[in-house]
Length: 619
Image 1 (spheres, rainbow, N blue to C red):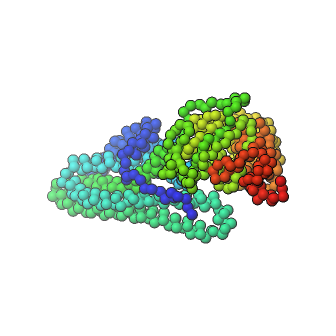
Image 2: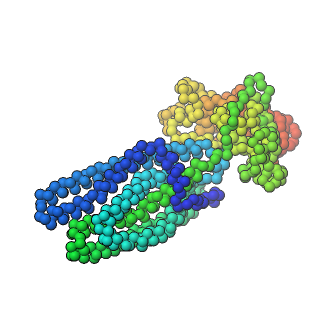
Image 3: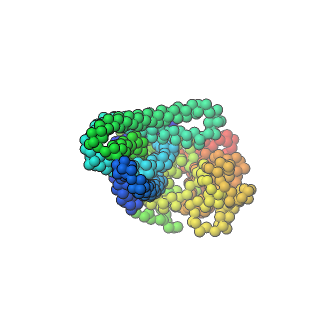
């Protein structure tokens, strides 16, 4: 089943001056190249319009007069014009391609930087494949606008204007014959433009859906193969692929119809021109060279219109892509930076390092009432009542003293990992406060907060690159090799690195799939040691490994936890029996608190969880 919001909403208009203004804002840093390219347009247009007139002179003044020497000079002039024209066109094309590439570079940089600032809830709602479509395909459409659309449209407008002026100046009656079919052409082009507009949007939508599906399927290929769902996935892919093909075919039909229609109208105009112009030549009202020049100008008049379908496709695609790109850039992060630097408690401070104060939180949207401390919001439509099913934490309160090691336990779905996410500000509370060193996390600068608190997650994520680069992730770039080696020893990962063919230089595959879960976790512990946070969160760090790996990881964790304030989330109760304090979560609240032996003697929730794991005989 695909995630909610998998289909994209169609927004905006076919052409939006506001979007073009924003695109110009992105292009402005490269305005010199755009200006230089624009200055070439008049010269290119003049040389383009000069060619038919040179043909007229060659026929009337030299060919019909038998002046072969003069014809040679005219041919030399014509060749010079062609060389100059192609040189200017090559320069112009280079400048606009270069501009498009630089704008594309800037947009991708802006999009990626913006995506890094967005909150976790945004990525919950938007498939990765769709976001990749924004950063890759949609930005490429903007580049195409500069390379093939915008330049061509501006050049065509100048050429058409020049052709009309020259033809009216040469013979206004013959020009009107040529233009007689223009109203039919305008009506036809307008009709196909309206029909094609939605098809271009549909193509972008179908492409985003296909990318999202493909990304998800490839990431989950091991699960697909495990459950023998290759046929079902192939069928689903075929359906989405067929939808994209049909949308692209529909768009192609409109483009081809427009091209064929313009071609037919242009041919009819040439036929009219030959009929009427031939009579003018016979009557001596028009020279033969003038008729040939008119035919050339007529071809130059209909040629850009004939290519209108392709140019419109490029421009429309760029408009739709711009809607998507700027829509993403306009998405405001739900998590905002604090307005002031956060105060840090000293070593002798009695202020709790971590404090949850009457925290309410649910992943479903809730209304936030104020930005200050205390009550921050309430359940939408429910007045903050406890009865809402979508609350994960309900009036949750606890503290962790400086240097204390506290464990969080409870049944699945009780909000243990949610507490870690709220501490890191991946999400903000709906109501209440989360404080670190006595300061509301909403007042911390995000970078400072996440530098202050380190997290070793259940699934250690490794990036493509070397083992050394993954271990150094987030640490100071001036780290010496002996410091890295010491971290590996403390994390019990030294033997692992020695077993790799290239040691620290060993290449890590995507998501670290060439290493086992336990090996990835050991490297994550070494990474956390180098990161050296003041507060450490361990989220089920040993839940998915074998007994031998768990023993190594526990040794590494013991060294990592020394001297740090730590919050340990665990399902395996054997891993947290030596914690200074154990908090038991149930129905979104801390229901029990104490040391291992105390909670067993109390015979409450913790004791029942312990019995379920180890049996009633082990106390």
